[in-house]
Length: 180
Image (cartoon, rainbow, N blue to C red):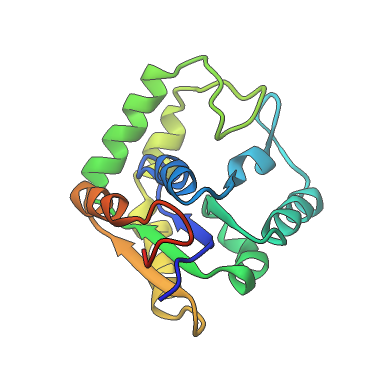
């Protein structure tokens, strides 16, 4: 099986989507696209929907990419070009702790996966209402998506940090060197 060259990485905040996307991109030599950089403008201002969709459409038109971010309402742009979807279905104890730690460690700093002018915040309402409720709000949507992917799209579900490490270790060193 050919190594996928257009890959989506999904999962809750703190699950390691951006980290995994960077590692896949580096290993396979393909560009990494962080959807949050399209969504957030300086000062944490959300992009206008049409502009966001335009940026996503331009990114997916490329020949190769690994793209992290959920934005399930924009899957209609991404899935037709996707060759593999990786879902980080990690336990809440892992992603919640990581998200809190990341907020504290990077507080006030800009991250490359969020875009310029969006310094890391410690947002208690995001943590307690959005992230804590991922299992009831979004997990079912991700599970449904993974079980009903169109033919030809590989579904890869990683359920623990150990499985993520094993997946990374098994990645080829380029698109030309075997199956992922």
